[in-house]
Length: 610
Picture 1: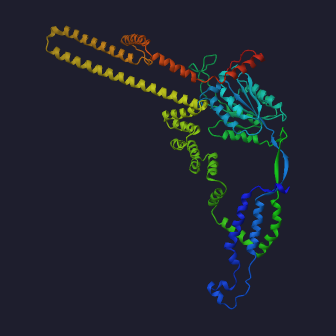
Picture 2: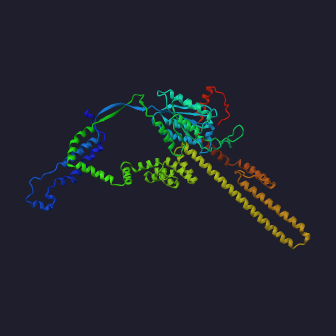
Picture 3: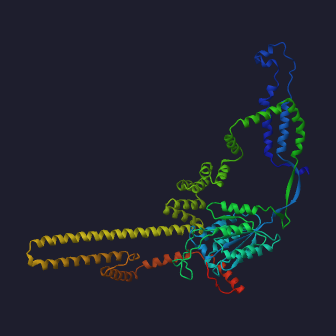
């Protein structure tokens, strides 16, 4: 038993010699003074005849040292016995239900409802440290992507391959998904759990079926989208249309979802740019404090602290100090010093006493006070995150640039993009991909920024080309007007019989000018044969220009067949194709397709397929 003797908090033992030194340094001599020592200088005391032979000394310093030593020993946590206790775990199980209907591709929240919902699910999975988690997706039918598991990281990795386009059947049947989630929860020991539904809406006629499918489980809803809605873009261009030819604009109706969440004793929240929605769902989940013993019958070792028994030795000595009035005086002085300060200063000093600056900043950051948090954070990365949240992107860029790792480069790329420095943002995402080519978020942001830069470059080239063409036309008009003026001056010296000849010369000059314009246009198109034509001619002269440029382009392409330029382009294309990642959703698509065929359901006949 005593062989296992130890202290749980041994650092408190360091304070014991410090306590003794302070007591005898500041209090020992004061308590040992006699009456004459209060009124006579120390160097004259030896000449006094009334000095007693034996000085009477006080025991209070020794009592204080003894009491303090016992208290510090109790705080250090002396132990020598263990108690074996069974481990408990949360009996809670949750099922994530994700809407993958076509309406989730609407762009009323950027980039799409589906992308924002997927990112939010990753944040939500990061908060699950206990219990079991499963994932179900649905459109026209519902499918289990992951059964109940204690590893939410596995589910987070599966989110990358999800997309509305991989669903075997279009439509929106949330009642089937909720019924499947309730079935998963009923197979476990607890029998009930928490269903977290991420969706952009439900039809009124589907509410009774969904409510019945919930059963005894709690249903929390995370609504995605806006009440105004937006069209659903198609990959080939245009927007999704209904059978009547009208453009589909899915809108988010909050009242049906709020009513359904209230009836099933769950939480309802809209998707937010911060973590307020996640915290609300987690709060609804942690409201249930049901614990069960660990299935593997694991136990934990808990030490029995013996320190509190030492307090029994302190009570008599504390009573002695109280009798002398010292204990009361010390307590009164401490109480007076605390209450004499303003409340604002007290709150500040209290936080400084128990929280480090980083902890205070994190608390302010969670409360939304990002500007104050940015001033308190000591880490440059957290300073950048707080500045980013507060909208001070330049400050965020400054802090992120002080770090040299992938996460800082990713955050810096986002801040640079919002600050309008797209080229620098693209370079930041390229650094992230150089460290980890499998970073899906960085790849998506990189492609998006690259697409925007290309669009801006094309617009700039179009504007420059249009300005050049306008300037050339203006110059040609000025040259034509000068030539016409010269003709008129020459014609003023001739008689009326030379009018026809003058007219003929003017037509010849205009013909020469038109030919020069054609040749110039042909040469210009010949130099820029890779550019797309943005405008179509409205007259015969413009049509001749295009015919001439097409002939020049074909001739030049034939000449380049024997050059190594095509080989270099082909090699570059092959290298680029090798970098294209495999379709991460192919396995999930095939899995759901086989499951759908196994069920043997009929083809989709519902009019609303989004």
